[in-house]
Length: 110
Image 1 (cartoon, one colour):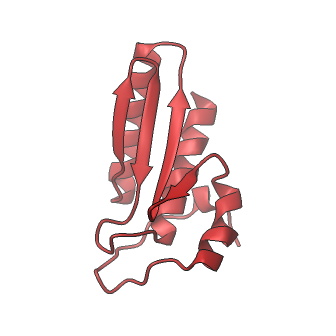
Image 2 (cartoon, one colour):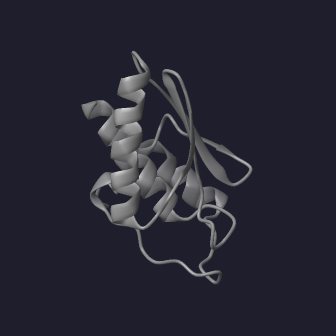
């Protein structure tokens, strides 16, 4: 299996099946700092200051747009809280883990 961060999100529809608990468990090691809560992935990124946090948000937007998979986020001075789920199915798909891994890779470079 290739690294999630090297994969691309696939188009989803309301008929796309949600991930099972076993599938989530299998994908979680590739997005280790993300927590699953109420069928959504959550992570908080911390930065040294507000401008650095905003630069990350800009990079996150670029990645999300390229993947066609958009998270919900909140900026609070030096923190960016991200919530990610597949809106079309109201739960988690592999796309959520792919985007999480890509965001983690971007954070590591920031």
